[in-house]
Image (tube, rainbow, N blue to C red; front, top):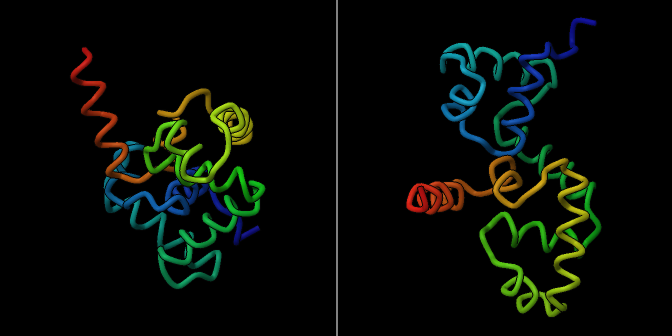
Amino acid sequence: MKNELTPIQHEVYEYLKKGVALKEVAHRINKSIFTTYYHATSIKRKLNMSSNRSLIEKGQDSINNTLPTMQHKVFTLLVNGLSNKEIARQINISPKTVDQYITKIYRKFRVSNRAQLISKYGATEVKERITKQQATHL
């Protein structure tokens, strides 16, 4: 079918709907910024979307629809860099319950740790902070 995404477009789409900047997408898929832009434009045309914001909102909707309310709250705080104890305090649940929610979140998003989750869905500032922390531990 003409409106189906190609494998590379699907990969670009997955990053864009998570809010990853086009330049970063190009780096992650090992393509030029021009090729990535071309694919992003094709995706928007095929999906009848007018902007990257539409892609991000669609991606956010899919995350919202995937997680129950409390897991979504934990997910949001987690990808913004809060520790388990900070998450527990912020939403007034026990740290053990936070651990259980995080385990379920990891399973749903097919990741095995916080760094992978943040790498896929987290804020750029958090990713940069984690990268700097990892570099200091080498």
